[in-house]
Length: 488
Image (cartoon, rainbow, N blue to C red; front, side, top):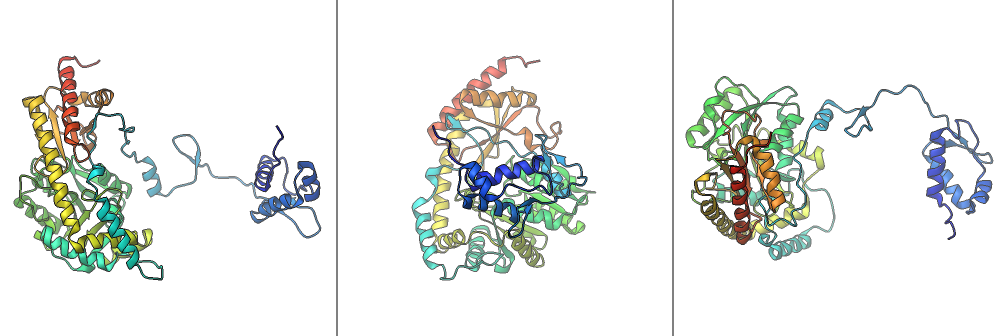
């Protein structure tokens, strides 16, 4: 088979590699374009294109009528480069970059295609997404867009902020001005803005224990020092705040993640009083407020505080889809301008088309109708899960956090906490995806952590029949682990 001649890119790469390896030293003349073209069996134009690329990048120098020569590239002493986990050289990082490099994100388990049931929290059933409604909204939004394409407002489209202002008042009893709302690319960007604007490196932040791990990590990456405060069936233990000082606190008062507690009003008032004493801010992550089953909707902490110490964080990830990266911050008036500037510096603005499509859903009432349908479907999944756990496992388990949200925590009385990783691993082998609560605790030996295995069971992406089959397998695992002695 004939060998295909090198193209300009191949000639460029070969010469660059030879220069780097010292085959052609600084000042050495390269072959003429005519001679090299004849040697390689290509056109002179091809060689000339390769030389021009090397010339533009500074690897060679040349002048009209003279042969190209290797440029004198300084080769002085180089600082020792940091190396990544694979041992490869890495350019010097800032202190923030070094903290990020040391951050270990939660590992995403392998594909769940072959699982009987995957109880991963955060996933939603594809069938629940309002595809036709969303498609129409996107089409309408595209037609409404102005003829000239330009950057949007950093704080978000005015129409969306107005629609959210009205929705939050209707659905969450939260009153605010439109200018206090900043649209972000999902709640995680909202947390990142809070961390970078409100935390100094070495500053302290209060966080629930156990907690949402990605919140803890984003604050730690900013240089914050975590002060874990125990959470129980009523959320953050505010009696443990006495004597603590911090610039920031992160809480999930309407549905503590992961334990599911709803913070009572007495604790809410204690938390607000603590924030005032510290001149700090409380981030209220209201991540799944749309889902309430056996309890009435709870007004957010923001409404109780009139917004003076509270940053309210909301998202559409649980109501629509985590793939639609839209969330929002409701900020104290004094903080809104600086957050808007920081948002502009980060990425200019959130995606415009999606913002306008969401506006259409909110203004037409389609969003709230969809939420009601999703609530009914997830209520059915929840009821199926609770019934299956009760039937298959009875008093061998304790279920927490079932009154709201899209997950429960299941504690296994006959399985020690130390065996939790093995229990989870065997579950995947047997065909179910289950997820341990242990990594959500900052201190594995915390007194508040029961000495028993615990799982965070998400059900929003699992159909009722899959839930029943999955719990049946779970019951078999519990039986096996309850009779087997722990491995040495």
